Structure formats: C-alpha cells, structure tokens
Amino acid sequence: MQKIESPKNEQIKQIKKLQQKKYRQQQGRYLLEGWHSIKEALNNQPEKIKLLLVEADYLATVAPLAEQATGAQLIEITPRVTEVLSETVHPEGVFAVIDNQATVVEQNDQPRPWLVLDRVQDPGNAGTMVRTADAAGFAGVVFSEGGIDPWNSKVVRSMQGSQFHLQVLQVPDLKTWLLAQRTAGYQLLGTLVDPNATDMRAFQPASGAYALVLGNEAHGMAPELAAEMDVNLYVPIFGHAESLNVAIAAAILMYQLQLN
Amino acid sequence: MQKIESPKNEQIKQIKKLQQKKYRQQQGRYLLEGWHSIKEALNNQPEKIKLLLVEADYLATVAPLAEQATGAQLIEITPRVTEVLSETVHPEGVFAVIDNQATVVEQNDQPRPWLVLDRVQDPGNAGTMVRTADAAGFAGVVFSEGGIDPWNSKVVRSMQGSQFHLQVLQVPDLKTWLLAQRTAGYQLLGTLVDPNATDMRAFQPASGAYALVLGNEAHGMAPELAAEMDVNLYVPIFGHAESLNVAIAAAILMYQLQLN
Image: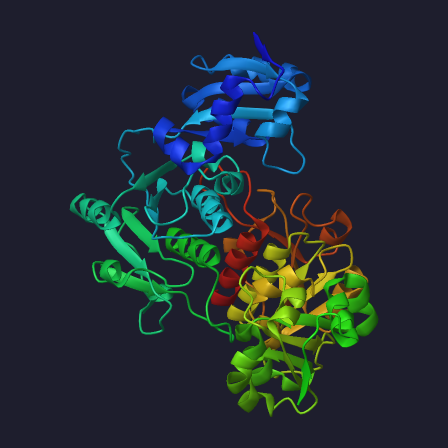
C-alpha cells in the first residue's frame, strides 16, 4: 500500500484542487470526507470510489470494506496531509475521491418521483433536500446550472451519504429535462409561495411518476418554468410567517405527496 | 434625535456586548439586525423594542413605523457604527435592541400546540424550527437550558421575524414545564428515531392542546423525557437515509399533526 507523508506531494495537490468547482467539472470527481459518508459509498456504490485516503488509525476499520471497492486505490496518509485536505473542524482523517457521474439505473416497474432544484443557492438547503428526498423514497434529485454545485463540500456534508442511495444529476437546461420527463409520462409539479396556487391538500399525483420543482430561496421558481407545470402547489400557512425555508417546504411537500 | 458617529461610543460598546449570551441574560435583551425582522417587531410587538439604531439612508423608511414603538429610542448611526455591530456580510445598517421576555398572552378558546426543543444545538436548525412553528400555527416554541440560546444572532436570523408572531421561551427544566402542561390538559408527544415507536400516520392528537418534543441532533430526546410522554412518534423512512435533519423532522410532524 502506498503511503503519502507530505502535504506537498503532487497527488495530494491534485486532490486538493477538487475543492474547486472548476477542477471537479474537469475531472468528473469530487472529494468526500468523513467515515459515515464513505461507509455509505463502500456499502452502496463501491464502483464510484477512485481513491481512499486513510490515516493509520482508521486503516483497520476501512480496509475490510475497501475490498469491495475494486477500482479504488487505498493510500495511507499522515495527519499533516489530513490538515491540508480537510474542510471540517474535527477531521477524522478519512477521505475518498468519488466519480460524480450518475449511475444509470434500470427503469423500475414502480416509477418513483424526482425532486428538482431550480437555482437553489444555499449548500445546507441543497444537501438537506437530497437527504430528505432519500428518506421520502424519491428516485433522485436534479440540480440546475446557476444554482449551487451538488459536489460543493458543504452540500456533500449535508447529504450525509444519501447521494449513494439515489441519483444526483446536474443538467444544463431544466426545462428541456422536465419536458422530456413529461414525454416519458411524468406529471410536472411546481411550487409557488402564492395562496392562489393549488393547496397541496387538494392535489394527489396520479402515480409515483412525477417531478416536484422547488425554486431559488429569494426568487422562487422561474416564471417560464412555472408556466410549463401541470400544477403549481403551495404549502398552506396557518400562522403569520411569510414563507417557509425551501428545504422545509420541500420536505413537507415530499411527505405529503408520498403519503397521499 | 440622538446621533452616534463613533463605534467607540460607550452606548454602542454596551449594545455590542449583547452578541454574548452572558450579557443577553444579564440585560434580558438581544440585538436584532435587518429590516425584515425589525419591521415584524414594529408591526407585531412594538412594545418589545427598546432601541432603534438606523443609518441615515434608512431613516425615512423606519421613522413612520417607529412611532408605534413608543418605548423605543430612535438613534441615527454611521456606517462605521454598523461595521462594529453587524454580524452579516452585507449589513443594511438597521438594528434594534429587543426585550427577550415572552409576552404573556391570554388563553385562547382554541388551544394551540407548542414545539419543544430538547437541547437542539445548531442555530440554523433552531431558528428554522421557530419559523416553521409559526407557519404551522403553533402557539410557541420552548428552548431548554443546555441547548442553543434562542437569542443567539444566528438563531434569530433564521427565525426571520417569527419570534414576533408566537411565544419563544427558554425554561430551566423541560420536564417540569412539560408536566405542568399535562396538568393543564395538554398531550405530551415525543419523537424517536425508532421504527418501534408510533408511526406518525397512526396517531391523531385529541385537540390542538399538545406539546411536540424534538431532541438533540446527535442524541435525540433524553430517555428520561421520552419515558414521560403520552406517545413517542417517528417519521417513516421510505428510502435508505438513516434519519432526517431535526428541523425537517419537526416540519413534517408539525404539518402532519395540524392537517390530520
């Protein structure tokens, strides 16, 4: 097994570049930190793991599971290397480089819904929405260009490993993607902070084949997207709050639609 | 109207101390920043405003509403003062000092539920839960000692002014507070990340008279509190996520219980 002791090592420098969006897009990879998420990768999508970087203390924990990641190189690192790669306050000294291409999965007999983020900006909101979509049994989450990058380290931290349980895509043009879904038989459900939209309690999707679109924190959904929807839903407000946080609204809607 | 130009002014130094919990508790006040939240204070609970600190640019906007805050002193400040008081990246130059004592409201004929936070730590989670409780029509939110301070500036920012629409309390002993609520006829609903707890879909509160308790991010509810509950609920997980973010779980439960 290779061991890297110096943070100035060329390979470490290349890996550290994955903290920047430009290099993530060039290389089609992102840097994942922390044992909880890496364990989810090893248990669910080991083929996506390209590199495992582990301090000596953690080797005995990681090595048995690492055998499942046949395409991954396992490298021992030192605390000095951890210090350079880590973006957390209390690093565990466990990192992985992950292929960020979505796995193409076979079409399920029982279609499952998609969550679509139209220019959501806040990394914590976006990552939490992926985690909630996983819990709600969704097929995947689609990120638009112009919003937060799904492989930003803060987004990935909030996902808590859910990216290995469902699909995470970034598409250049949401409208094109959504219209293709409609052609494939999906209902398109938008969301508006507008009591004149359809109260979520008054709507039931025809099946699990639907895409639910949430919009930007400040501006909501783009009007040209809202105009394409089969229905635009709103979450009723019983008190005096003007609106809900977007990740909260997404959660209430996902559970409401799945439980209906 | 008084004008303060220097950030070294003694009054400004005292106000800046409100960024620390110790001084907030000593003075029973907190510092609020940003026009959106301060407008909510002026429109809903002007009696809680002790001071308004406003840059010249904003005076014309604030002054007409400020007349409602008869107990508040209005002070003009300079951008240099804003720089010292602000905890945001793009300060607006509008601040208020707010009395943090809960307003005692008359008992409603229609009792409304309470949200209870058992040692919730993350400021964004706690503030978002207050905002969501407002939207869901709850009577108030109770914070425990040992969790995040409700008047921490990050918590307050996430509340988005909802603290002026419902009650926000901090109590020294949650168990005592909860048992008093039961004596007053409230049902006590706990939450557990445990499929052996009661599925939220299988439970309906008898009326709006209930308290819903959410626990610490890492450890959940204290077992000695969970043991006192009339029922402990869990949010069903349809996918593979191990759990939900606590603010998300709270939102799903509050809406589920209110819509049932």
